[in-house]
Image 1 (cartoon, rainbow, N blue to C red):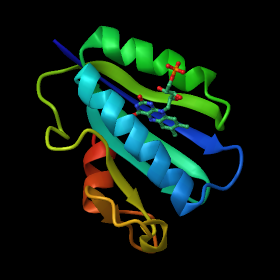
Image 2 (tube, rainbow, N blue to C red):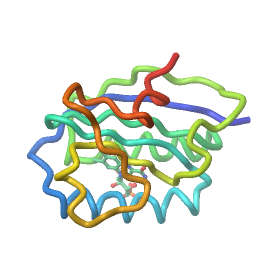
Image 3 (cartoon, rainbow, N blue to C red):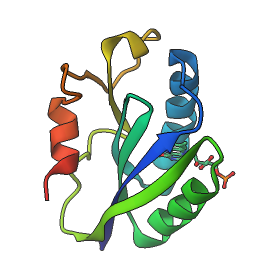
Length: 126
Ligand SMILES: Cc1cc2nc3c(=O)[nH]c(=O)nc-3n(C[C@H](O)[C@H](O)[C@H](O)COP(=O)(O)O)c2cc1C
């Protein structure tokens, strides 16, 4: 069984491209070990993240996210079982404004002026 959780949060301080690169690099490594895939978007100091994987791994990551002092106002938007992974190809796809991809990360999706990208759409679908 797979579980999917989507939340929104606010960055405590504006993230730089370097901070985002480091956050994504560390997260991708850990997610790969835990069987977690998903998508993170960062626009205007707001994160929306979708994580999918084995329920125990999702719960452990969720507890870490709730303790993480880099963001706050964390609000769970959706959580429940799901039959298939939406982000099977990415340990954590990332959508943001193009200038936040100074380090040319793989799995990066630039957003349009409304903060939308192809990958972010997949995340917000019911
Ligand atoms: C917006 C945001 C997204 C994050 N995404 C992930 C993630 O996908 N996977 C992950 O392992 N850690 C992620 N982290 C980091 C975790 O919150 C946590 O720092 C990390 O898992 C280590 O947790 P631990 O010290 O409890 O072991 C994210 C942090 C933030 C602020």
